[in-house]
Length: 582
Image 1 (cartoon, rainbow, N blue to C red):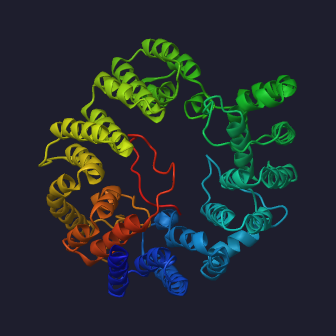
Image 2 (image 1 turned 180 degrees about the horizontal axis):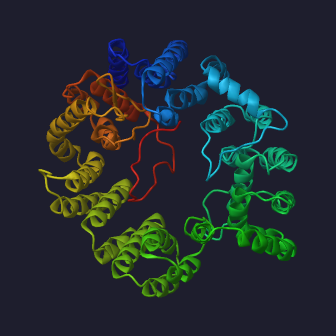
Image 3 (image 1 turned 45 degrees about the vertical axis):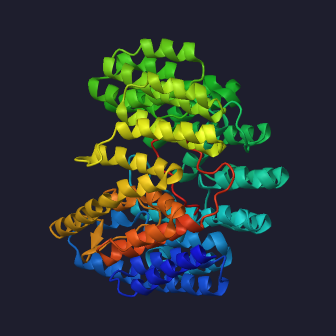
């Protein structure tokens, strides 16, 4: 209770300092994060904070419009993706979907409202796509995706309300975001998920996909999801699946779209992307479709034919064998794009003999080494997740890269520590010592500080005193980095990390330049879990008000987060694990 009180004091401090911030978008983010954390203690105060966030979104909209009018940067509107509305409103929807929908409408910029109304017209044609970026349609897609995301967040609170939200949203269009909702509903009620999937497929079937390229893209993604040969064979949780009948209807609609007399370049490229999946659902239609594809390909310029062939590199349904077969046809630049995709595919393979044969066929020596490293790393992950920790420990010796060794040693140490026996805790401590030997405690470059912070992550759970000892001097480096970036931003109008000399806050970290302050949120949250009072003192070492405010919220968030069973189980991966669920 004392520590919870301390966390609430940190939140109140952040809210108090928010009033000194220049940017309305920053104030909105502070109020939203504070409301999210206050919810379980005081729903009324949380709602008041959410409404304050909504008010500041309106001010941020005005500031954004003013900036566009005064700026001579023609690309300024391109930076709108992931703006403050897209960050703040989902936090509110997690607790109160009705309030989020109310604020969604209240804070909707006039241009977005106009674009939505235009897109809803029966004969409205979507002109966006891979060859024709359309900012207006991009805004429509974002808005529909946001609305449908609220339904996903509402699903756990009230599945029936979520279904109504998504059905209303379908009138505006179909997006890929519907799939996570179907997956959530499926865990609670398979029949309701299947019924909603019927509505989704019916909407696609009733849409002229030659005019609605976004819906066509979503339809192809649904098909690829359902026919993906690289999907886990035995997932721990039952996954949502479209029924055979739904897939047949979906595939028939996609085929009929491609068989229209006048195919655009966009449709021709989409056809190539869809054919591998269509072959598995409607093989009887492939002869006609491939004939149509051959005719369409005759009119393609040579460079687009190459582009079409390269699509195999990023098609989720492509196998490692298919990518290998394409390599001789690619130039050096294209091979550089193909190799990362190939190594990722090989890492997913559980059959060691098959994986090693594929690695031997890679012509580039460096890529062979990378593929071996990634495969061994993935093998360690699988072994550890199966509970074979001693075997996983032995496998770490097969790794050659220091960065990967540190990641796996730390992750394995944390797994041993969870077993909570004296012997396992001792093993965890020894693994952390092995990892610590590999780092430079006084990092001199980006790689070295990343390695050190990986070790901090492990020690925060296993031996917090060591973690704080390593992290304390890093705060000074983060301060230097943030202040230096702030100064440089004055001389770069396109810098999106600072505005008016103030750090642009992000709900879940990240950002355009991946600043150190955001990169190590996960570690700071774990340190707060380990010793909130000590971490609170460290947050006071952040010199800038903007940095100190957001860090206090992140730390309080990590402390108050109730970790659910199975959460944050990304064993030793490259992705940072934050305590975010919005």
